[in-house]
Image (cartoon, rainbow, N blue to C red):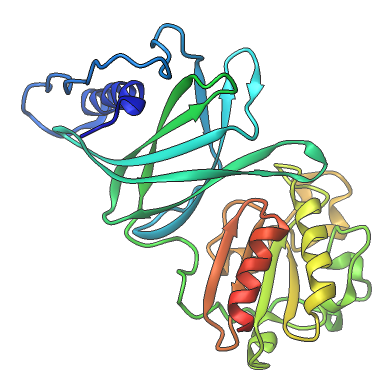
Length: 312
């Protein structure tokens, strides 16, 4: 039974599922009636007409059956992004008959980007089947009132990127041995040469844990690649004797771009790893198996947790 706390959200999700059936469902049956919603009064829940209008900005693009780290922003109409709120997420399968669920209810944690320029909420969600899913997001405002938001996600049978527990891709990326100057390998203004000294394949052959981050500090669409690389370099300073750290630039010819991205050539290593966004960071154990992967910016606390798991 749904608690009163989720009444607004279930109503919003019901509308979401009905919209899906009307626009994209394949059933030939008549459109279903809305699911009955509990009407218990609650001083904690805002009436639908008074709840702020929220939009979910999904930052995760590669969702598949199994465990997923899902990141998203919450934007209030007329106000902008909402930071550091108490947020819960519920998952529902969207079917021709309506919603199946909730399958899971989990808290989401806010992860601020460096410099306070923004941030995302992160929730760890498990999907048990491919297809269209609904995410119900319930935000508790500073005055204790509640505001719902919903979004749909497409869950694939298999991830585009290497799955957790699978062997890392043995890429033969360019290194310092292949270029005249390090500027041919990175747009980082203060590069660490150690991070360009070996290929991913060579690093995997050392039988040590490995972190690989794919980022383009100068040309990042989200402006988080530079901060991401800074975080990785800082963490590297405390673990360089225990594991290897590599940076793969998004562009294969960073020294030729000169501010004109039409001249940019995407690194073939990104295609090998199935990456269509940036930044991405992967953590492998000593056996070369992927134990953690992060789409978008990941802060030091989450990275450190992943690193400790492969150093044990």
